[in-house]
Image 1 (tube, helix red, strand yellow):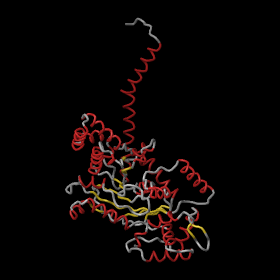
Image 2 (cartoon, helix red, strand yellow; image 1 turned 90 degrees about the horizontal axis):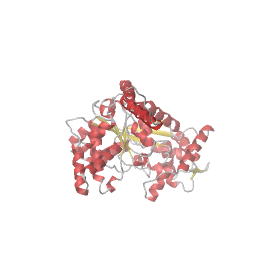
Image 3 (tube, helix red, strand yellow; image 1 turned 90 degrees about the vertical axis):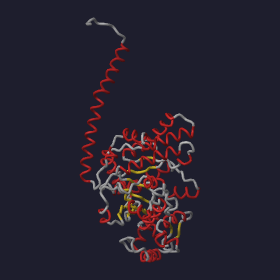
Image 4 (cartoon, helix red, strand yellow; image 1 turned 180 degrees about the vertical axis):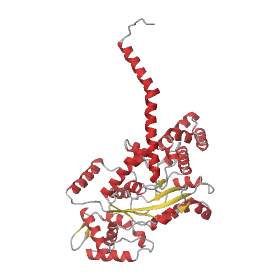
Amino acid sequence: MTTPIAIPLWLLILMVLFAAVTFASHFLFPSVRWFFRRRAERVVARVNERLQKPIEPFKLARRYDTIQRLVYDPEVSKAINDYAQATGKREDVAFEKARHYAREIVPSFSATAYFSFGMRAAKWLSRFLYRLRVGQFDRAEYEAIDPDATVVFVMNHRSNMDYVLVTYLVSRASALSYAVGEWARVWPLSSIIKMMGGYFIRRKSRRQEESGELYRRVLARYVQMATEGGVTQAVFPEGGLSLDGKLARPRLGILSYIIDDFDPEGRDVVFVPVALNYDRVLEDRFLIQADKSGVRRFRPPLFTVLGGVVGYLWARLRRKMTTFGTANVSFGAPLSLRDFANSRDGDTKALGEELMTRIADVIPVVPVPLVCRALINGATTQADIASAITQDLNVMPAGLRKPQRDGAQLADDGLAILRRRGLVTGEGALTIATGQDDVITYYANTIAHHFS
């Protein structure tokens, strides 16, 4: 037993490596996981003390456990069997496809990442790029929401900055879970979004003849589980960015998932309309071009994006500009799904239209759209624009919050932004720059419904 033996060096190295791996897997890794889990629990406890709506246990569950719960859900199991029968594939193959979809959808929420990194980044970016304003907001309406209800923020979709602005503004109330499109499924952005609680959806799943129904069933069950668990969510009923500045008709996918599984005797769901508007939408030209071409899928060229970032930073350093103007967020009247279901028999289409109406009613009025509207209506001098804005302010809907500044100040602000972008030329007599009519129309469209 004590007799020395000679072994090759490579074998000794291999044995040491195996021993190290065994030690790490049995002793080191569990200790490290325990340390970070305890740290995360302390973070959640501190955060929940200041949140109006604490983080729900469903959101804090381990991602693996949520995936297992999802793929073994009875409705998903039935969808797996249906898919296997329809395609002639083995059930284990169908099951693995469902598991793949579940892994793709289910986020890996990190309270540390969300409240330590995400909130700070959202706050800094929002204030760095815009003069952020909260327009319409009735605090009493929101304090009256049942604290046990699932809150779903429904928003119009102007820009990818929508995610950032609303995440920052509601950070004192709760942690949001977003439905994010395929555009964000690139590393490392996808990992960051999952840590922030976002879940990915395939906008074009209907075109997948074989597996589209299975994917939609897995997605529906995840949304329903999250809703049952009280997870605060944010949804864009339009389904994508507005290409022309107008509000689009609602797409009822996620809303229908919520309604189909809703139990009026159980936890209520309260929809909170959120309306956003900007003096400058960062993607405006790409959106307008997509509208012209009829091809919604677009990716801004990398060098164009980098050039825009460098140009903006250089202008800030030279103090040629401060921000891109005003970004205004307003909140409409909340809608209880329980009350709506009792009065309208749970009609998904009617719910979508009602929510879009409530969003439209509180779309903020900001300087650039007002100036663009005046230019389209024939104003040719700054005095004419100021007069036209004043007239618009006087005929605005009674329930819509008006800007605090007068027509002349709004005209000054809006024209300064348009001139800096080269969209308007001239000093005394103003004209829309050649080829920029579409951009002016885009911004005018954002508020046109208030005056129709």
